[in-house]
Length: 458
Image (cartoon, rainbow, N blue to C red; front, side, top):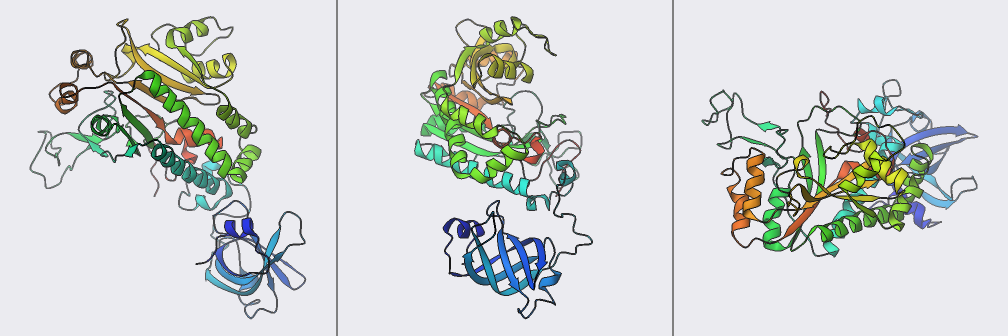
């Protein structure tokens, strides 16, 4: 198997005969040689190739190579006399695998705007920034699975299509076969493939609770969907969620796990994605690495929602969204608290029941629930979770208040009828995490194929 450029640069096995494949970034001709910069996507740094004019296809092919062409190169690795690179490959053979017409190929050796690249979602991962995002995202996904495996969690693949609205906000994409062959209809011409109304899931939490009540510790990590007409830099119609669920766990244990997860993931990416993070720190978000390291090194502060509101009301500044007890905290409020007041990540607990979903456990005060949000500098909320309501009667009361049909949630209520146990969990938006780690200002840049209102390329 051919070696990846990242492996070659890290091992620097000078004198070895190698075969590498990749895409040409640049070609420069000088003194009877062509200097090719080759990338294969395995790392930020390219490998310099020295192609001598004595090669058989030097005039016919090598001197015609342009950005984007794919090649296979055989040669010997040697120390490089040039600055900025330790080694280079002296080619003994260059085989062109695919040409890229320089007249029509839209990606050249210059900086393209992210807005421009969004309209080239099939080509944008070839750029340095988007390739680096993909590598960081892949490393974070691997670290997520390592974290939970090391702690005895079992991964559960919850359904993408569901008949239950977890958030109760009515923002689900309905799944129909309008004009199809199904005999089941809702009376309005919308054919119900599953025999009842179904939608794309906004969360795997409710189904994860089923398995937590049998297996103890589970997590789901997959795509979720929200039919919310929010065309902002922080919202997507399709996004990924990390959702652990734990039986015999209360709010305190839930907060501890969420804090451990965030610190573990950031420490892992700082260790394994150094060059990519350095590029983001230099060109995208100066101070990024120091901020990530600060989260790893510091314990998170903790306050209640009521304490948070009191501090916001006492703030010597004017917020765009007025503050009062009972409001849903906005990003400006969250960032003020964790950046200006505490200067570190912050966990806010015990939110008003009226602004939280039906499944969160009611506190003894009768007006707040055992909920928690983790706020981080630079972005605000990144994790949201709660202890779940394990008591049947209070859960029924909350569902009635929310206007939910208890018969449709009969399976969920059974979990409270048969061996109910305290349990808790949280959701970590994966794109929000990648956005935070890379410093990208728009969430559309941290998912391979963004789906937003009016926009679904590829």
